[in-house]
Length: 440
Image 1 (cartoon, helix red, strand yellow):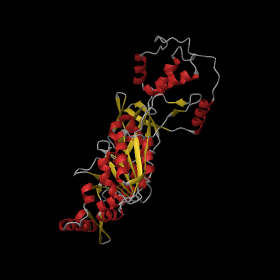
Image 2 (cartoon, one colour; image 1 turned 45 degrees about the horizontal axis):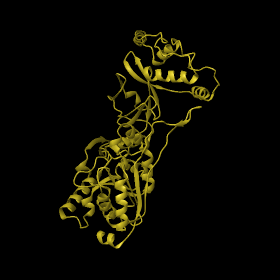
Image 3 (cartoon, helix red, strand yellow; image 1 turned 180 degrees about the vertical axis):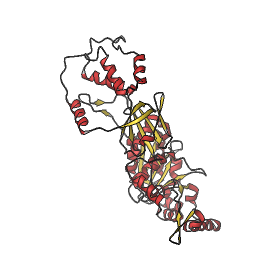
Image 4 (cartoon, one colour; image 1 turned 30 degrees about the horizontal axis):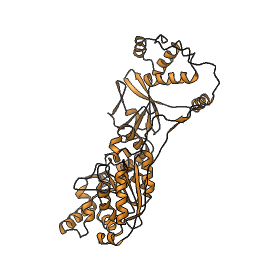
């Protein structure tokens, strides 16, 4: 293994960011979520200013940063919390006192704050930090001391988000990516909620060394989630109609290493349906590709170094990309034995039309799951599967999720949350005379 390959693999195995990795920036505790790729010139816009992301390279995931306006311009500075700060914060949250104060006498007439906007700009020009501005606003508020502790904390948090925003460096994985897309671009992932995604993986029995066939028309979220659970074992095969594969751009956000990327392959339905042997030109092309892989001089650059009178050739490492063509030995195995499970997420295609095409490629007694935003396409598909006697154990599940706010003396369900997370049709493929005849 070359030095470049070892360095690349070690970077991706660590829980520390590296240059070129994808990260999820959580700004102000979920108020804004941004996917970004860490490079020397990448930036993030917070408010009306651009902040470079270079200080985030080499920091562990979970680090917290705060904006600063220094002499060199706006920047992100890492916050290191101590054990004393954490204990004081916990004690502050748990110390609930019965107060006689309330907010009934407070009048919101915009006269309680004596600090003007010109004063705040003057503090910024002098290099005052965001926390110093927040403390100045609190000190110059005529009504802050008369508010309840909950109102004071709410006021402090509101000013902190405006004048001293914080950025949490999060690691992208299936849950965080699904949550972010569901909040920002739900249509791109077919309105797939995170609890629905977990049910899809569970009903499909996705586990190590599984060969999972997926029809992923929601940007590659299903493909990435399956590959993450496989962990570099088995295969996840993304099949498609026609000549153009479906986009799996979301897979690149997962920061998969080469072992996992090699297990993410694609194969068209036409190639799966082709039961004949490969043509002679296809065999020659495949053998030529195999020989190029084995022959370093044909597909890699060689650098010669003289060391003690001997020449040494080193290969240039080339990272694997997800979504390459499935290898021929795997294709032959799938045609003989079938896939171990099937997941379909195709909101723009009729469910029954795609199921009757891909279900024969499953092995007998293998589970399959179909996701759709609406109920009727799955109900029609379920009826047709029963009539054709292609599966047993058919059931339609409607996932339901309730989010709670958990705070001292303020634990209650969220008032605004998604009402529907779509529907899931699950079942087990069986062997009958019709399906056997079709496969043969």
